Structure formats: structure tokens, C-alpha cells
Image (cartoon, rainbow, N blue to C red; front, side):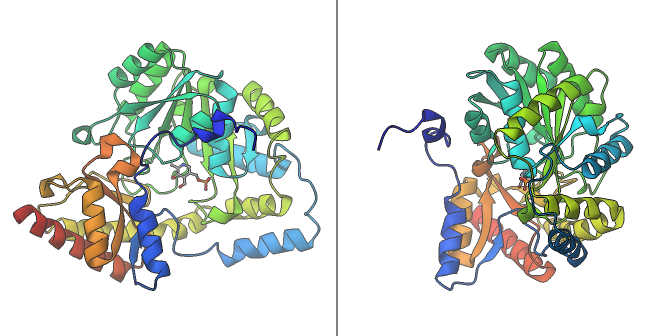
Length: 394
Ligand code: PLP
């Protein structure tokens, strides 16, 4: 076989990716061992029947040919309207590119702003694909570490010094955050904006969890002074409408950037299937009640889990104000997140993600996804706490 490009052979970086526990759990499950999985960010419900009916009507009605590459006009208009209403930033259809999911949008956004070799910053802890996405776009990923003691919120100084040291071109942030559940407050976003302007960075703002906010409000950094012209916002129907498998999302940004991104889409994805776009349009126009209904189980389970966690003092919770996850500090047990997660899986058949899967800043932590039925989740959190207490005493 001729040589493959280093672009793909080095995509995952070096060494362990911290996902061994996840794969081990899947293997145990395949062997018939009942596992409580608190691992991945996928709803435990399917896409709503009304959305599927709209998809079916669109497909059987004939919307199965090549669709408009930037997205159908009505959907671009609806996404633009939604962003204008929710963020206060005047947004037109020309500011929107419809993409096959948030992940494709993250890749395209980095392709749009990086010259090969440019440093691209991202905040650690981070969503697992971030460094690989940057490498795929021929950039050099640079993690900006944050501290558990600061609730993993980045500061101006951390971003500014990383940007200066590497001559970075872009910064990727994610609020509400996966894996930590933090929702960046205004003062953090102000610091991010200041660092972007001071270092002439593009901001790539991943807001795929914008409908899952349990305390406070989601603020889009694109709305801050001077930021609309340097921000590419990533949106998705995956989390807001339980449409993970439909692969539909968007990028919002300056019209000139979107025009160039349409050229990229023409030469890569060639758009998103028309019947999926029609279903997304139906889902968005169904209004906030449907979104609230989809987010509700996570809100409820977060409260259930926090109540159980409040009754003990071995495991500490990072203040989780959004997204479908809780980040737990288990450093009192003396174990790494990875060692704890393996022991918990082996002993109690409960699978959680070690913090280390999301970067070194989250070492000694665990991420639990609130994607399991209430009773089973409560039981698993109780078991986890007892297990942690026993380990801490041993
Ligand atoms: N960004 C974050 C922070 C995520 O957690 C995910 C999925 O888990 C994505 C982006 C990608 O989502 P999708 O490609 O399904 O829109």
C-alpha cells in the first residue's frame, strides 16, 4: 500500500486516549454482563415521532434529490431568526451554513480559519474530538489548561499567554460545557472576548448544548462587542431535539466567511439531505416546548444526582449548570479518574468516563452522563458514592 497522509495517521495524537473504560464496558455488555452506562452523551429517547413524521412526509413527498448546498432557504431563515431572537445579534440567512451536524461544522470552521501548521487553541477539559478535528484541518492543537479550583473556567491570562506563545490563529470554546457542565458566566466570556481581540483570534464557539441550561442563562460570545466579526458559532439539532443520528447542525458567522465555507461544503459534504432539513425546520418551528420536553429528563436527573451527592462528602461536584453531564472530583480517594473508573466497572458494573479522557486538567475526576433512567441513575450514583467513601477510608 502506498503511504497514507500524516494528516490521518497522526489524527489521534500519541498514546492512550482514555477511552479504554468505555470500550471495556461495551465488551462486557456484548458478553451479556448487565452494565449501567453513564458514559456517552446520547438521549435515552429517540427522535420525537412528530419530527419523524415530518421527515417521512418530506421524503415521500419527493425531497430526496440534491438539496441546496448552503441549506434550504427556509431553514437558513429559521436558524437566523432563532439566533437573532436568542442572542440579540442581527443574523440573516447569508450568515448561516447548514452542515451535517455540529462535528462537521467544527471541522469546517477550523478549515476556514487555519493555514496549515497554525496553532489552534482549545480549552482543557474538552470534548474528545477537538484536538483531532484541529489536526484534520492541518492545524496544531494547543490545549489551554484550566483548574478544577476555578470550576474549569478559563481566564484572560491563560488564553492570552497561550496565544502569544504559539502565535495562535483561533480559540475553540464550549458553553454549556461538555464534559464539565459549566455554563460560562458573562465575566468569563468578557475575558475570552478580550483575549481574542488582543491576539486577533477567530473564536469558534461550540454552543450545541444551548437548550440545556439548568441555572443562569446561556450567553453567546458572538453577542459581545467586537465579536460578531470574528466568531463562528457552532449549532446542532443533535442535543436540542434528540436528532443525533440525523446529522444536522450549522455554522453562524460573518457573511464573507460563510460564502467561503459554502465553497468548502460544495467540495466536501455537498450539503445535507433535503428531507432531514425539512424535519429540522419542522422541529425548530415547533417552538421551545418541544425543546423543554427533550431537556427535562436531564434537568430532573441532575437534581436527583445532586441530592444524593449532597448527603456525603467524599465526592465533590463541579458546579454543573448545564448540559447532560456532571463532573465529579474523586481525588479524595487517592485514585486517578481512570483507576477509579476501571475499579467501579469491575466491581459494580457501572461505566463512567474518567476525567482523563477529556484532558489532563480533568485528572482525578469522572464525568457521568445523565442519560440513564432515573431509578437506575440514582442507584448508580449511590453505589459510586459508597465505593468512593470505602476507597477513601481504606
Ligand atoms: N460539540 C460537543 C461539545 C459535543 O458534546 C458534541 C457531541 O457530543 C458535538 C459537538 C457534536 O455533535 P453533533 O455532531 O452530533 O452535532
